[in-house]
Amino acid sequence: MAYTVLARRYRSQRFDDVVGQNAISQTLKNAINSGRVAHAYLFTGTRGVGKTTMARILAKSLNCLASDKPTTEPCLKCDSCSAVNSGEDIDVIEIDGASNRGIENIRELRQNAIYRPARARFKIYIIDEVHMLTTEAFNALLKILEEPPSHVKFIFATTEPNKVLATIQSRCQRFDFSNISPADIIAQLKKILAEEKIGFEDDCIIALARLANGSMRDALSLVDRLISAGTGKLTVALLEEFLGQANKDKIYGLVEKIGLADAGATLADVDSLLNSGLSCIGVLDNLIEAFRDMMVLKACTSGSQSLVILTQAEKDSLLKIAPSFDIPAIVYNISLLEKLRWPVKNSDNSRALLEAALLRVALAGHFMSIPDLLGAKAGGPADNLKKNTPSLADASRGKPIIEKPAIEQSESIPVSEKPADKPVLDAVSDIEQIKQNWDKIIDFVKSNANVKIAELLKKTVPLRLNGTVLALGFDASDEFSMKLCQSNGRMETIQQVLGQATGLKLRVSFELINKTSENHSKPKPRGAKASSKTIDEAANSPVIKNMLTELEANIIDVEENSQ
Image 1 (cartoon, helix red, strand yellow):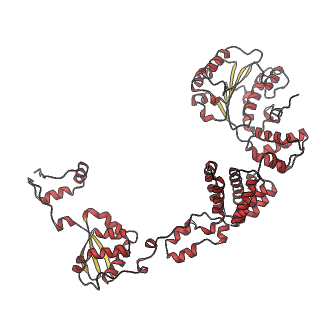
Image 2 (cartoon, one colour):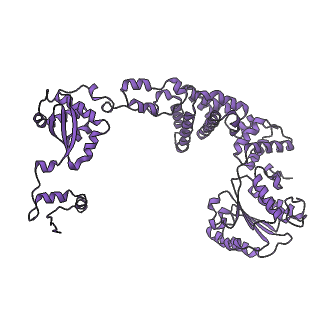
């Protein structure tokens, strides 16, 4: 007799047998008991969570011949129940949406649906992977789905409900199947293995539940693969050997070396994992999983440790390593490693990329943290670099890091600490000396302070010197430059460097002037009747100024309205 895999042999037969979907089971049972069974259902969820199983149970409950009406407890022995279990019932038609996706298939379904069932109460259509139907096929299904014959029921199953047309979904009762919890998977696996009389280690079952990722069918398929090894008892060593899973002790050892900032041991552990048959992506995935489990264990209280699927020994190992990291560092490490998956997967030098990233995390002492980098700009560079360089203790905690940049002297060293050039003037006493040497003073500023500040001062005109207060004028149209000089500490820098250039301890004030009209007035346009003052006043009007700019025009004349 042919062997039947565990996923088929232990498929749930009644509503109460379905693992992890109690709410949906109870809802469907209530609908049957109250006689409110809908004409169309849409079951959604990831693979292996019981969608098709629930559809078959619903079909058996509606058509069980041992009962004179739909029942929540099908007998599982009558011809209808047996045929549904084997997929051969003539009144329960299972259709694969991936291979019967065209409009012709749906037209055939509509033509056959008008005929009454051969022996059961309802003709039931179960369409698996319904999202694979074409748009034309969906549209052909709409009418019969909205007003089907009284003897027809539709049950759709899909892993991608977003691909099902909204017009189809609106005509169905939708049930979203959740992932099965690890605890439910563990309990079901232990029950099945006990019935199969196969020995197992508890740690192996926990690892299988973690690998199943919420799918009961995947868990049973993994168990089948281990059983086929023919060694009898299911163990963690068997899992690592035949399923290619990483040794947790080696993964945790690598995490520990990263926390201790041991570069050589980190590379040695990576080499050991790669030589054991694990790929670079596999190393990344296992590290991300380990850091995630550590983050949960550190963030949650002891009563919330059920959030991780780990054996007690694995929890103890992670808790022993955890003091080497803080939670922000773990979050950063997870983000860094996750971003690395795509480059590593597509790189010709994936191992070098992986090792460089792990050394970047491990050798945090050779990098500067973001807050420390920002702090370095506030004070002197020498003290700040010494003060803000992370120690090995900080490195072992894996601070989020960026590479230490070269700090430019022109931005970080105050003007007074830089060796100044020879002053332009010596104890200046009047404004005329400043005006005559203003260009030289600006050159002095450029070489001793900042090029940007020198460019701003080029736009100014020395106006007067009252004691130690030097008044500088900006053209009325350049108010923005004046505000730049007054903001972000530029005023203090300007006063300091101008004092060095003139030999006085100056204070500076800024004001707006109509420099153009003071120095030389614009000539009156040829043929203009209005005065040049009137034309200038019109040109300074904001509305007219915008219009002249947009049209690239000039004012020729202004005609004044007597009204």
